[in-house]
Amino acid sequence: MKALTVIPGKANSAAIAEVPEPSPEQGALLVRTLAVGVCGTDMEIVAGDYGWAPPGRERLVLGHESLGEVIEAPAASGFAPGDLVVGIVRRPDPLPCVSCGHGEWDMCRNGQYTERGIKELDGYCSERFRVEPEYAVKVDRSLGLLAVLLEPASVLAKAWDHIERIGRRAVWAPRRVLVTGAGPIGQFAALMGRQRGLEVHVFDRNAEGPKPGLVAELGATYHSGGIDEVDVDPDIVIECTGAVPVVRHVLGGNAPGAVICLAGVSVPGRETPVDLGLVNRTMVLDNDVVFGTVNANRRHYEMAAEALARADRTWLGRVISRRVPLERWAEALQRRREDVKVVIDFTA
Image (cartoon, rainbow, N blue to C red):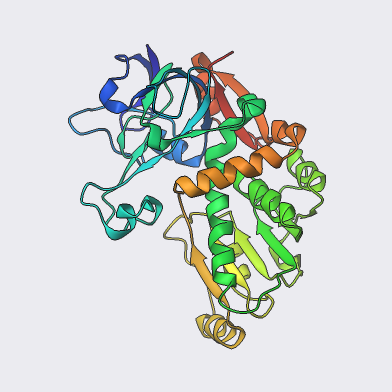
């Protein structure tokens, strides 16, 4: 069967290759791939900056944002042929650590986890894949190909889960949310904020393209230009850009007791002046919280599935800005100004 593979650590090594059919040892569910989403992590792996091949292998099958249709399933698995499923990305470490031992592998303490399509496990960007029933999430069939958005949405479901857990440290009645970045992660942050009935503001440097319209359709307010011009005094901040000037800005100027979630990954080595004394003073005197988040566990995938099921299908369809067939995979990895989420479509 065909799969998109790469030699981790070697730039420009990505290629479609013939690979063996997935082994039953990889999971009891045999799944026909319908779509695979593309994100910045995939681009880093293709650029040779990230990723690990399975032990004893040179090449890694890419793809961690999956959607497929079950072909074969054991009778007692809870799945049946025809079910639409998404494969969870991370697997717990073999020891396991205390977090992995409790099903919270997204919070792994020792870094010995593995990840489909990223770290030591083949991904989902092949014509068929296998997955363990406990790492497969059934999705609403009415979503169709839109269910490929579940994995990135799960990251924001986790962010909101943790925000609300932190908020319960005291009496808390948040009203206003600032989301920085209007890519897929930012869009889902805004979606889930609006689903909670909150006033949502989204900042992105792009004044044109599909992003402003997507935000407006959610009933949120879009801001472009400079981050210093955004003055909304938020109770919650979800930072999705990783851009150092934006991160610096969101660490101050929030409402007292604000919760700030950092969901964007910054590029190291870029120095910028920061008045740490002022940041510390503000956080201490206002009882602010800043935390980072990445990945998701099964609970968050299920929360994300509920959020997508509640979302407007037309809006979700516009989040997917391009669908590219497997044979033209290289186009999916080329950034375009109008892109929001790009998907490799196996049904094309």
